[in-house]
Image (cartoon, rainbow, N blue to C red; front, side, top):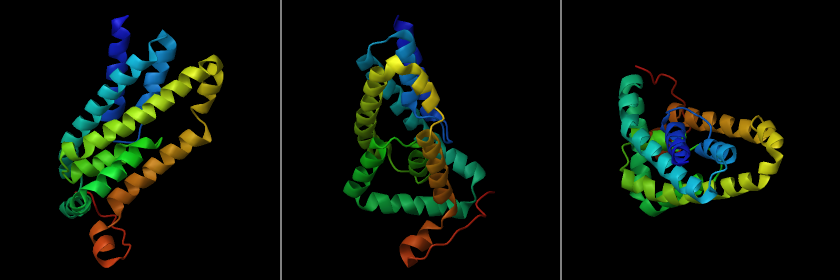
Length: 197
């Protein structure tokens, strides 16, 4: 039924609109594809569109969150990091593409990009390519493994999913608590835990 595909769209949108580490959007896409026996290619296309819309919205409202909860010096620090990424656009694009290809939550990447006010056209195209590729691989593997649904459920709390969540929290910690200006300009690692208003 057509409304199952709407669930895929809104599920991916919801999973990728939240500003904290959450399950990757492909997990809801895979779940709905298996439960409703949906066409895997439509799930990939519709899910990636929902995911991109979610990340785009996150890019737009990340500055509002940072202005409300982070102190001005931390905001300037993250914006400085974005300016550095913006200086060499090709390296930045390759980094975004490579990061999007990995099975890691992209929340830290989009929060940092949003706070540093990178333009969506700078981050979204590479994200679409990486997201489409990684979600296609994940969903095709999920379809192949659908005969072993018990192992998929068991793997929800596997060391890989736990490690992915831990790495995402570490990346958010680095984004918010490292003084990026000092690190880049003076090559000195300094932590600043006074970031809240």
